[in-house]
Length: 314
Ligand code: AKB
Image (cartoon, rainbow, N blue to C red; front, side, top):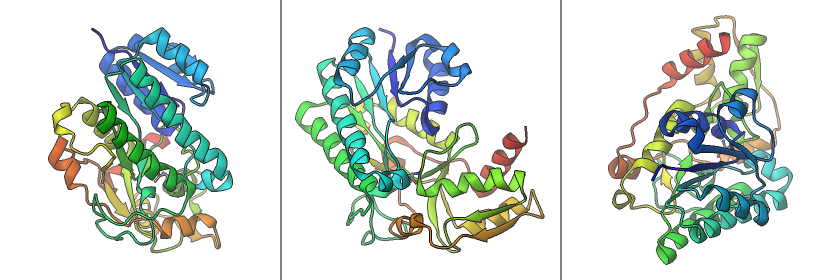
């Protein structure tokens, strides 16, 4: 039986690239992009698109009924910074969206479900450096709280109902194709656009703020590798730690200066996103992902910077 894949929340930073990669692997007609907003022209015309609100159970039911998906990727979410502006909506979308998808995936016997978690599940009392897979987790953003609760639900549905649900704790994702979606790590994308446009950037995170990051190409490859791995290799059903690289704003600025020598980095003061960043890990220990399904990143800071700048210059 051919795969039929639903990507819910397909228009965001991850969905835009994931849909393209899945369509290359599984053929355009078998990957259904679903969002509450119309996608760009290219995505709209490359394969099926459906308007779907993951909080609307009738709409979701219709889509499961129509496509009988073998795989579902749920990407619709409010991220850390926008979540703090609207905590109740963030909780509703991030939690009830997940529960709806877990329930319909069980009801329609979906073979595999993917749901992203985040480094936001960690908090001020989690170890900062090389944060392990299992440790104290005391997130203090509504986004982090919803992701940690979501991880517990994923594991629960796997243990109780044998649903094959898989997840990754994404670090900040850096990409040039689609705009970032309201996160704390977004500065690491804005900086490239402003460097090329103005030659300077005012960072909302302060000097010395080291955060885990990853290039989107690595993140998409890792996500598909996790979904392609045999089920008996997936020992973690909450969510896997997933590492690429870690850097501070000044480390990134120094790398950008190798391509744009006049680039100047400034710092904005008193941004609420600083407190969020300060509660997150600086680096991640992802040996479980490495051991269980062979995860290995390919992009270091120099390769990432080079690729971002050459693509944004086109
Ligand atoms: C955010 O900054 O909110 C996201 C994330 C790390 O999950 N990029």
